[in-house]
Length: 534
Image (cartoon, rainbow, N blue to C red; front, side, top):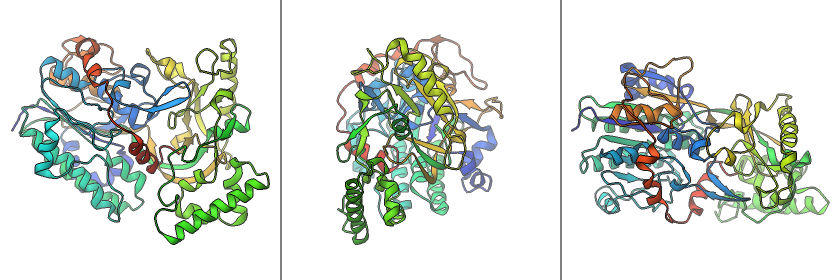
């Protein structure tokens, strides 16, 4: 047993509006106890508030303009590649701890693959890694699985959703126990991704409660590994709440003369599931797929634009049936157009960046916007997007901003040229080429997550803390130098005795990580299942 060590727990996607009643009534008793001991406040996320840019900011203390990731993908010209650890141009907290001689144990944090060769600690990569990604040290996987069964990153979608999610969460707790027996750790950092996934996947609040109640139990088990009085930090990378619409920004750009489209390849978005491909054996679903295909062909034959095919399905009585059975996938099945990037002025290139890229001469392979015309084209487009209204007459965006007003740092040029801030975060902004708007009530990410600690962090409860504050605060709590390049501050009673550029201390770990980590098709499919790649 340890004492005065740091336990850093990531609960992806939790939002006070979603969980506060369960904290207050003791359903989530371990979270309740920590709240009563110290601090419970909001944690302001990155923009956009998505997992792939938020967790790197959480672990590094730097904004996306510094670490260089704005989405699940990084771009090379018009092509996209799923991000991995080497794409994050910033050193992580645990790498710095290891470089100083402390022992970090890291379990399931997103974008930590391929795992670097730590001198003292251990890493079990998480989200965005493929299912069979290597641990470090590699022998740990065989040893763990001999004792606890096969370690899994992602849930299998079966008939008992609660059981599947709880089983995945159990592995995080069991891995913590397993590594606790083998390491005299200073930092135990464990992340639960399913606390986000359940809100995307489950509509039943009782099912969500059951999963979270089990996670809360596992949280208590992990905290107990810290001994009598560990420092505990529990945080989510963003919040979660109600959305009302999907806005198809590339469709809007196409309709307004900024974006060209072309015929795309089947499965371009990797969005269709087995049912959509008619492989499930379910008669009702397969017949709907067949009907969609027949109707879409007929509508196309009479000259209807593929972008309008889904709208046209309503005229033949198929749209409601399709959306009931396949609310996400049917939309993509009913269109075959994608962005013709090389011949467009502007487009949303990345799936979830909440941003628009301009196709600039000398920067993109077939740029259409001259450097001299860049400012005027961007200003015109910002003005046009600022005035977009949904079918109810409400403005879609609270702000439409040039990127330099949102980000700063050496990777500013990699950010979208125009940054979109949806009104009250009630709108998904999709790059699919279908009808411009779709009313689609569902849960998705909000910009304020949660922060809980068993210490008084002296946070203004109205403004909350920043996700950039976590890495410097935990570093100070561990007695590490605080990163001189951080965008955050040290919270609470901890003091930063020294400030050093973490890249000078731990930059070599990124180089050690720069290796092939395996195929990403299965990861992209899982992102599609959760609605991230429509």
